[in-house]
Length: 136
Ligand SMILES: Nc1ncnc2c1ncn2[C@@H]1O[C@H](COP(=O)(O)OP(=O)(O)O)[C@@H](O)[C@H]1O
Ligand SMILES: [Mg+2]
Image: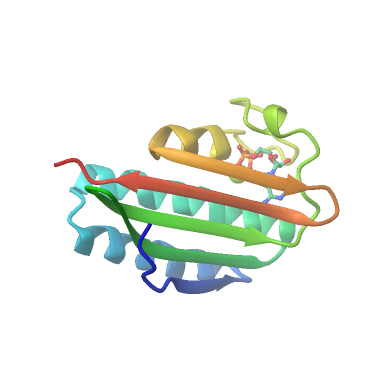
């Protein structure tokens, strides 16, 4: 993996979600992603920053270009010190929500991106890492 520095956005309010979306859109576009993929990546960023805001109250998003072997892409990290997720497989089930949401944020983001890692500990917080790779 490359060691490009990540841009970091603090998520404390609705307006930070807009700022995060713009950073992700600009980064993905400058890396060469097409409009359809840019929209997918921005949608995932939107859902995952919203989860930070709703469930944890605050946290951070980091955005950086990544490269491994012949591949290049973008990596987004969403980190909070909120309540955590007790049952991750339940949370990943489409339609499951604890907030009268659509329950599609986590499963939808996994589908929109190429890779997703979710680590969470109750009482400690949640970290979601997603990546999307450019197709040659
Ligand atoms: N960062 C987070 N911290 C704590 N719980 C979370 C977090 N993100 C998601 N969850 C839990 O996972 C569930 C599913 O999330 P999601 O798929 O985005 O659907 P929704 O937000 O519509 O409920 C949420 O209802 C919540 O219980
Ligand atoms: Mg959600």
